Image: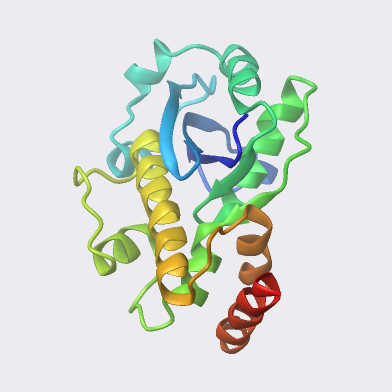
Length: 208
């Protein structure tokens, strides 16, 4: 699994909540090992239901494309193997977490890994950013992209680049030699005003 690994995931879906019967229509995932992208996973998913014209326009994923896509159980079994034991990351993680858990439940699988939310972390690291939507924070940090958003692999890739950027910024700003997943998780749950003091304390404690 490597010294440091996280799996950044993103779903495109038929709607906002699996509790309302919505399903995943695409999954994208990007594996980061030792702060470098090392692998990718992407698949359309046939939800066995029609997507609205709004979703088709928003994502570019049409009903015709989904008709030819593999069924969810096939895709999710493959994804479980790819997911392995890596920590999980998503931008607005509560959304992707719900869909991942719902689709895993359908194949009688579950995850042991916890999530970290890159959106919550970016709010604490970049408090002056005008917005923390994925597109806005990517532009704010001037991270190079291919210009495509709202497709699962493209968004997972952007989130992965943001994650790497945040780690590098924390190292540069605070002199941290390493930024473990648990540290970023902890930051995401803190009040913004407490983060700088906390990180300075971490550096002091490590220095002994």
